[in-house]
Image (tube, rainbow, N blue to C red):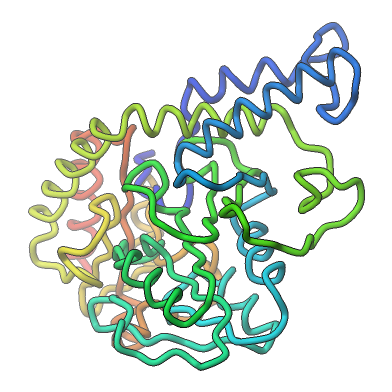
Amino acid sequence: MTYLDYQATTPLAPEARAAMLEWLGGPDSAGFGNPHSAHRMGRAAAAAIELARERVAMLCPSGGRVVFTGSATEAINLAIRGSGTGGTVAASAIEHAAVLDTAQALGTLHSIPVSNEGLADLTSPLPSDTRLVCMMQVNNEIGVVQDSAAWQARAREAGALFLSDAVQAAGKLAVVDADLIALSAHKLHGPKGIGALWVRDGVQLDPQITGGGQEQGLRSGTLSPALCAGFGVAAQLALERQAEDTAHVAALSARARSLFAGWTINGSATHRWPGNLNLRLDGLDVARLMSECRHVAFSAGSACASGSGRPSHVLRAIGLTDAQAKSSIRLGFGRYTTMESLEAAAKTLINAALQQ
């Protein structure tokens, strides 16, 4: 199996796995302590979590704190719901469903239009009561990179907070200046089941999960030292390998573009993370392609919305017809993708598409 779905999830880094094993101990191990207990085992587990917190914080600007959550979706909910109930939440039309559905549930969503390249319109007016501006740094479906600095400035001009969904960007691109930043471990070679919300100093949030008052009173519940440790090592590794990983992904992207030269790139060809290649071929039956290429793991869109049968809201927002959206595929590659496996998978996909 050739894995080309890095936007859905990434392989667990061996270093992160090794860090987690220490805290997955059985009854004869000292690694199963509750990090919120006052005894020696609990303090050791708590120290491991704080080390992980420091490492994850390195992905973000200075002058803030990291709150561990169960996922980036939970982090986004904490940011949107916890930052207030009044006023409008402004978000680009191609945000993740965690942003759009949460704002819609509150009845406060203002959709910011995007261009055919997927770039959010910086000239689009914001409602006068906007309290929060949400903008993905890198789009999960089409890989387009937004001008986060400009949107942070727009938010400040409006007197609003700025939430950056950095799930697809953390550890890959420079950190953004924001008030709130959502992160996910499993999108940067960490474990599933843990995310984080970075909160700028001075920003006040209301807890959305109450109980024991853990995580600075914002997110009650016993933390997993193993998941935190894995997240921390994955974050540290991403920063240490950033230049190496970026060069590797750029080479893979250049090769993939040459192999799929007859296909159309969805979204900007220049303002994008190169590890995301969203392509379409008019008339392509993607369901059939996936059935015929079962040894290649790729996506027909966002994994979070797969199986819905609906065309991607992202592809529709950039002007594609339903037919064009349904003839699109997403290839994602990264640190552990080899050039040889990419070339072989591309050949398989292209040959199967030509036979339709």
